[in-house]
Amino acid sequence: MNLKIERAFKTDLPFVMMTERSEGYHTLVGRWDEARHLAAIDDNHYAYFIARDCAASVGFAIVRDWGLRRE
Image (tube, rainbow, N blue to C red; front, side, top):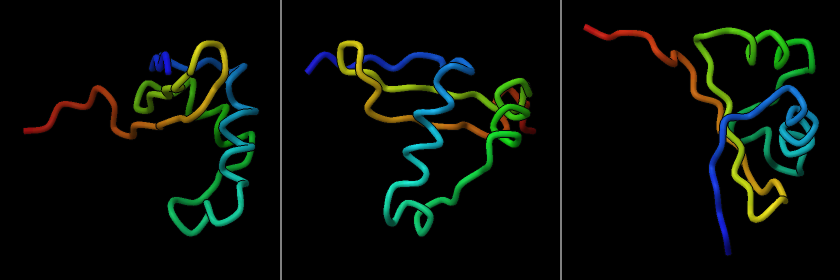
């Protein structure tokens, strides 16, 4: 396995949405429509990451409140 974790791009959203629609996934986290993902990926408060094994996407993470300073 040659796993890499990289920042995601809008071109990765179809993989994210397909994964969200996998059987049983909605019971773990939920799912967003395309418009919501497009807004979030452009919002500095979210960071999207894609896990790739060689060239194949195998997972993703969305970090909320990215870059917000906590006191």
